[in-house]
Amino acid sequence: MPKDTAEGAHEMARDEEQAVDQAEPAEELAEADSSYDDFLVEAKKRASSPNPLEIPISDLLAFWNAKRRRHRIVARIVADLAAEGLQTTPDLDAQNSWESVQITRLPQADAPPGEPVGIKIGSLEAAKIWAAGADPDNTSGTPKIPSLSRDASLATAGSMMLASHLDQRPVTAGRALEGAVSWRSIARAQFANPHATLRDAIVPAKEVQAEDDLLSVIPQIVESGFVFVRDRKNMLTGVVTTADLSRTFDTLTRPFLLIAEIERRLRKIIDRKIADGSFTQEELRAAVQGEGRDPAENAADLTISEYQTLLGSTEMWERLGWQADRKIFVKALDEVRQIRNDIMHFDPDPLDTSPLVGFLDWLRLQHPND
Image (cartoon, rainbow, N blue to C red):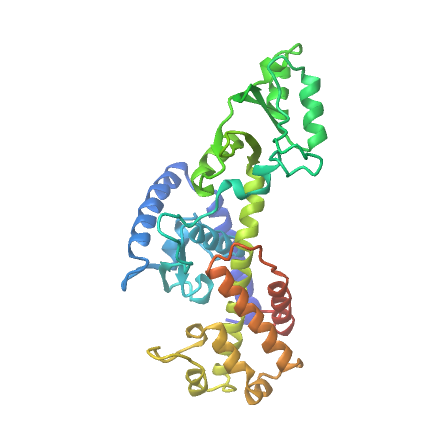
């Protein structure tokens, strides 16, 4: 099939599949949810075994109600699996659509006995905005909690939310949380009664402990839109919303997605060079390090440090044919490797992803159509 015709056919197929994706019946979605739970149970059970779960890519996509590996779908699958401590081997977009992938354990650092690996909700900035010391003007050592009483006015509630750029406020009696007021609850109360008072705008509010695992409280945040957080002294220290969740998971998943895209592009570049005869299979296998490794059949069998070995050779670099400085490239690739190690060991310090973004831009410049 001619290239133009093939591309047109692919575009038509994509449009048709998008239309199908948007028209999934509710019963099928409910059934898929149940099947997805069963899939997760089986995948986790076998993820660290010699026989991990193997699944056709088309079946994996079906759990996300998709038929094609569009960028957003792949990003969502990678993030969702990572949240469960899982990954696909090889990368989801490194295989042909009719092939299968294995669901394996995502490498992580060992936790001390009795200490779960995870993110505590109290570590989020939004969860400690009222904590002592979070406000530079608060030097008393006691948290300043801008809560409301039931007898406050709607004008007071609205003014407090405007002043703090927060959309919710706790309503308390002493330390007891009696509910919350938000812009949404005020609008609903005034729509029902133009003469509504703050009491009419109070809605039930959920609270969690700062030590609670973030993943375990996500359903509560999604259901209510927000939760209030208490510290070990039983003081309210902040409010975490669905917007805070989005920002947190963007921060957590962005490095994974950047690394995945970098590795996908490197593999494609190397496999292309093998296909056109610029690199040989023997040179690919010679780059493999460590005893007990199976011979490399393609670039997907190499680690990032082995990409460095392969591409760092002066001879191989010349055959690559890039107008770039080899030493700078290898040094930048080594920085990618170090960041990847930090990610896989769940380094608690914030990651600077700018080296990943810069390196990915470099690869895109060299091969914009990959």
